[in-house]
Image 1 (spheres, rainbow, N blue to C red):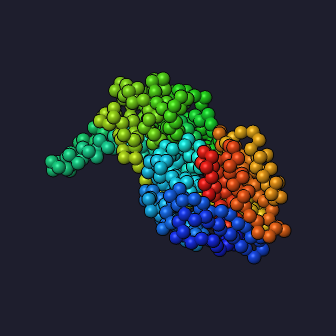
Image 2 (image 1 turned 60 degrees about the vertical axis):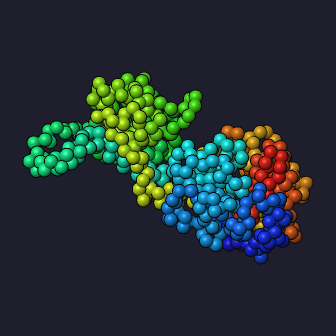
Amino acid sequence: MIPTLRQSVCKTTATVAAAASRRQISATASTLADVSVEHGRGEWKTFGDPESYQPGKFQIKTYNKISPDGLKKFPDVQYEIKEGDTAQNAHAILLRSHKLKEDEVPHTVRAIARCGAGTNNVPVARMSELGIPVFNTPGANANAVKELVLAGMLLGSRRIVDGINHMTSLGEQGLAKERVEKDKALFGGREIKGKTLAVIGLGHIGASTARDAEQLGMSVVGYDPGLSIENALKLPRSIELSDSIANAVRDADYISINIPYIKGEGGTHGIIGKEVVGNFKSGAVLLNFARGELVDSEALKTHLDSNDGRYVSDFPDDVLWDHSNSILLPHLGASTGEAEDAAASMAAQTIRDFLETGTIRNSVNFPATSLSAAPEHSVRFTVVTKNKPGMLAHISEVFAVDELNILQQINQSRGEIAYNVVDVDISGHGVVDFKGVQEKITMLEGVLSSRVIYGVPGTGYAKNLEGDYFV
């Protein structure tokens, strides 16, 4: 949240109509020094559309239908919400299933959040190169997916779908009342109590599924080489942890896949393949509400053909779509009003925390960075750089040359990205002019972008675009 003292009035030295003019914005608060930053240098064609620019507000660009409960997280006084191409000066993008293209991400965008766990529809690697964090909402749809997994176990146990189709056919013939008792033997099944469930992947969904399965009287085996302490604490006490997928599924009556889909070498494409399926017991039911590409359809078909197995999923399958032992649903996992509200609310709050304080939480490409509000009489400066030695020293040197005292600084890294947060003392100064400082830092070799967080929404952002300064 932006502290009250930092809700400053935006003053411009040029009007929005002066499309190609140089722009400066200052923020004044009663107990703070004046802060001056540059905003909108150069042609508007490299910045956005002056008609859709509203000084003093963050602009959020949305794709798909975002839950109103989530959008309510953005206060009107600080934010404006625009759909798709109407947002020409977006500071953040909020989306669900829309497949985002790079040309839909203007230079003004600081962050992208997906209302859901997967980010396959966002070019994450390219966003990292551009210095843009991508966020997701892990756990927001966990209950909705978990409930569908449990429903899938019942669908795979009792021939419910076949029975529904049979009764529909009898109804059309006018024979339903006559045959309803006689034909029930055609759709015999088994109970899940006392059976064994193997849970592959013990994140939010997997841990929740394991807990509820235990409550239903099932034995639970789990496998997750990356099990976090947080999720380990959520597991049922009786769970047996296995050292491989093959060993986890060996004695399981039901197998639930709850892992992400990762392309490329060492990824998870086809991870439920011939070797794993070969360890399925006769009659084993595979539940896939994670991603269709995780399963080798041909290998699974052998199990369905010869071992009376079942496959239940909410993803399409070109091989198994009409198999008598396969039940394929629309992609319903997170399609509940509650899940959509929770995901949108989490995504919106994540965006707010990042834009207003610099905090990074639930990012798939940036390091987690938990930040409190900047100290009194200070301005927060964040810098996204390539993860290379000496960057923090170069940044600190620029502040020292301009006689700006650093109160505290944080450096976090993840892969090729480093995230630097510097709180700068502005007490005892008159007007603190960050225009020169920000340009010097942003144009350092290895810097991707920078932000001055000082209380005026939508300003203080600069990028190094392959040697060109964008602000």
